[in-house]
Image (tube, rainbow, N blue to C red):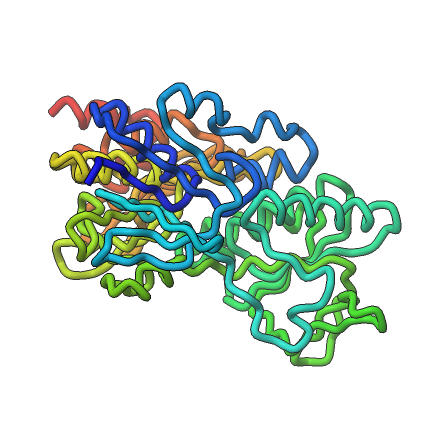
Length: 411
């Protein structure tokens, strides 16, 4: 068979894999399949600068088709893959055609979870994942601005809070409904959750924690008009943005008989249970040495896994071992997160939380797990070095602004 690597998914992971294959010396054909009408674009700005109207479509472009063509990477947009035939080593497309592959990359991403409540499919109830989603939300927001109508965000995660911040900056009345007792409870320390709650309230957001929603109500035209709570309260809304998490797009892999468990199961190099199929990005769940699974949703993860799977297809070992990092922009505050804070039993703060520039260090049994920095980029970069080196400051060292944590790296 002629060497031909097919990549399903034209997002960050798919593009990174294609370019890493070329950089690694792969001379065969590469076909990048995207199911959207657009070429590869950056997703992080969708809930922020793009939604706010601060950037144009050209600034979303990740790689122009002609840039990919110069690297002999064939981009096919608006292309739906229906099935993978592992025995024949082919992918079956919705138009009835098939593509043969010598190596297959699954970079299928994830899909927002739907709200399983009455009225959840009303007009004006939207989720944010794609450029088309963001455009639909922006259009609806413009109508809300014109008619002075309120917005409700369901879910106090990063996407929901970023949308809420953008809507408030536009002058809209915003209510955020979060079912948990605190914001971002799975990823932030309680004191930082509380700080973000105060941040949003200080900007005029009506924040409801422990929210129990029973239904979304609509008018006679089927357009959402409000969110009904268990206590009977109605939060009026002409736009409801649902941000309650995402699910890995694993169905293609599952139907093909690949191992899946809350994502496509891969090793540290992105290999699936089929030796010629790899997976990268939001859809991939990495099996860790202790047997647990880790699925990350970040640009860094997509880039690094893209490099790893390209190496695997070239017969090389390049496990993704770097400290994971993430970011979120809300109002004029940039949160930069390094490491994974799950299981932390102690926290220490560096800087003054009231000043709006500080870092929260997460530790478990004295070992540094993660650092969350707000408007403190220097702390963030240093934290990544500490985590990569396995070096842990004491809480007292963290809290002492005069102590240079960088000296710990010299020992």
